[in-house]
Image (cartoon, rainbow, N blue to C red; front, side, top):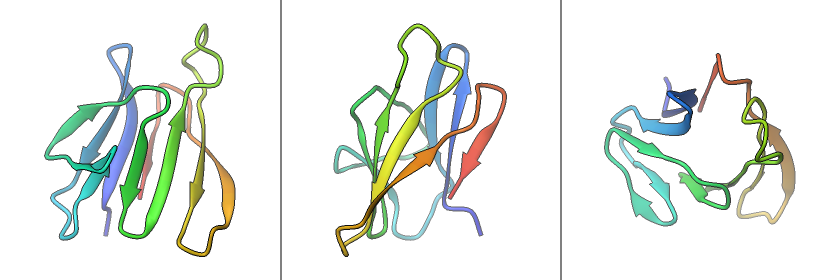
Length: 88
């Protein structure tokens, strides 16, 4: 089952919640439907936090985020190019 999607559409990174039971949060605010993302936004899905960061502002073809869970582990999460979507 998919919880949410991050995609690049119409020149903007978008996160979309799939009406998940526990919700998707951006900067600790619950979202409904689709919301635009900006570099530095903190995404929370259940106990996982993902910091959304655009690495090269001149090229929106790639972004890198880090994710961590309550254990304190942090790892890079690479999002796809602008023609793809990432699902959680």
